[in-house]
Length: 309
Image (cartoon, rainbow, N blue to C red; front, side, top):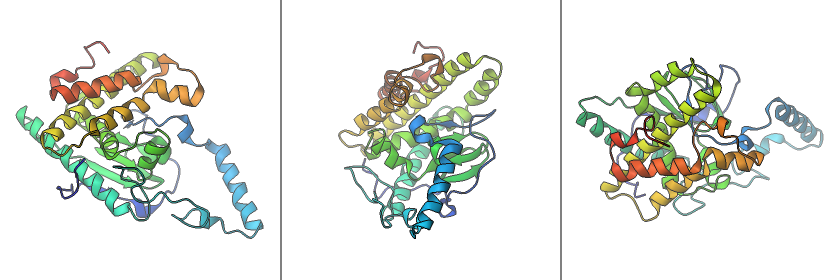
């Protein structure tokens, strides 16, 4: 993606200097909660058991005369730093890359602003720009505590996208979805939820899911998520028309969509799939709907609620 030198959005809220502190406030999945990129059980940590282990390890290291804090710094002793661009086309997190990463995110966000402003104007509507919050570890939001283990998500309560700065490394290393356009797809997907919020789709979904059983609510959630994938494809369609996509960019997005499908994640984390628990869609479905938006460039093509999926 030829992103350097293009307009950068001012709608970036950088909280990375806050670090990751605190618990509480609930999660992004309550009533009116957030809509996120799934990152699988393996990324979620070990809960209270994991915290206890870390506390024990902390005191063991102190007893041995080792400063545990040296393992928490970026690129410190004993730590492998993934700073800079470690894979071709991927903007990675690290001490040398924070500014570049912020510039990349701000540029992608600006491109989504331009695209959706134009689409909304063509429909006689006004697009309201969302805010993208960059954080490290954890931060408080209107949908509760945003934590790294949740992955990127959109909160309709404050109309903000929350993105931990380390997620792009995880996307490449854990999910084998490298490349700057794979990263751009993740951002565009969350902006797709913002579009749904502005058009009233998320409000209707939140009302409906309170009235149905869990299995039915999951099926509705799948349709919401696949539509966000389709909206991301629409953004890619218009981005390509600007001439800033490079060969292989769309393949990077399609690969990312495949790697974070519910069936793929469940196979990797638990060895089997439970279709009734799907809430984002299968790998094939996610690829299909991104391609649908990308090939058509039309909102009418993204009716995941009435079309077979």
